[in-house]
Image (cartoon, helix red, strand yellow):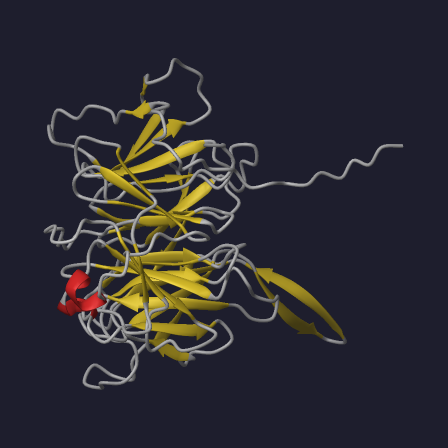
Length: 391
């Protein structure tokens, strides 16, 4: 009898040549906003749907499985308008159209409670309130689930004990992270990242990004949080079992953090991007060792290129943890092979990277293994690897 066991293999990417265009996603027209454009686009976890956050306060869905000719434009299959500007959104970790109960996403809408929306029809499933001391609604700037959206808690009832699965959502805003049990709409528990407004300790400012490490046990998981405060050391590591920072990650530029992400195959490697003078760089640290200096810095823009921007420059790492990709303001995509990095051919760090990287004498600096033109406009917010399609 043949075994029914199957082994999943990650997609294989060929970066020896420029990839060909498969299709173009074209957002729906809006007569009220002629210059409408997508701010962020993300694959669903199963890779069947693309969800785009647009400037006109809508979420637009694209069917990634639709068959058509190479280069065809794909129109959205549905759009969900929102009452106010969208700050952030995140898919439920196991979202798929094949499981209606899990096919949903969470959205942060300005001056509104956090919304859990059904991805099939846009209806509101639940809302989660973050209220300040003046009873005003706070919309978080960053959203994150723990990797399976679950946390195991031991419950004691009379003479019996059992494990209760708790789905947890983390929401970052000024000087705090609000943590919600997804099964209990309403208010969550607040974790202050700094002792007080006047204190210089802790992680201060708007929590702009939260990322969970792929390596964790049912008893404890670890995550990184970064802030918009333009100071060095504005990234901290936390455990969901406590509220105090485990350590601070330093050596980066004095600029606001725009994105954090761990390597899926190497959970001890943390990546970060910044805005302003540090835009165009991806910094990485090995959190097992010295976190005062970056392990490696990846530069997407040519030397001397004026690529400074306060926009969020998005990057992604493929599921196998080998390729890192980032866009830029000129429509280019840069791809780095993390297993075979391209060095800077002996040029000195200070002359090549300028004053923003002073003091990084033990840091390795890498250039893209592949860079290609992918768009006629800015492509800085749309980088996201597909987890199943071969390239």
